[in-house]
Length: 227
Image (cartoon, rainbow, N blue to C red):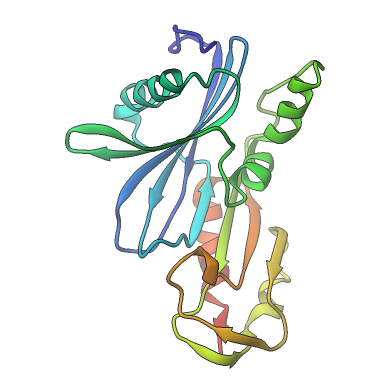
């Protein structure tokens, strides 16, 4: 069960920031992991344009003044559907009338946030701890590092029958890159980005602070273009 005294130091509150394109629709993404009396909470700000994400940066504090209100609404949503153990992903939009539930999922957050960014920034492997929990093994969810991580997606702004990514080789020399997956060589049937399905790849980095991670990932992605 989720501990009702969620303002006490019985769980770790972590914060993340997800950056999207410039036309903003504000949402808050919350990722919970609950094992007995321990709750791990990650909050991300979601900025969205035309349905596709461009960047995620973890971690940066957002909505500090509304934190308790957001947590309460998300937690109540999980309680309402009986999701009391394991990872969960709740999406909330903060409006002029307060936080409103968008969706509730019994899964970790996607887009490499759980698999890479949280691990790079804090050394927390949510997937591993979840497996250990259900195997009946001891678990240890605690912050092992205090760094920052970011992912940037490579997108095209126009349709092309045949294309190549330019500037990629130089970008991949950057020492902050921890992992990447990109389309190399000739790419066929490239579409102007309208959804996440139109991504041509991604780059994940690790930096000392969220500000540095944000600046670095935006700079790296800006050097890659489709020709």
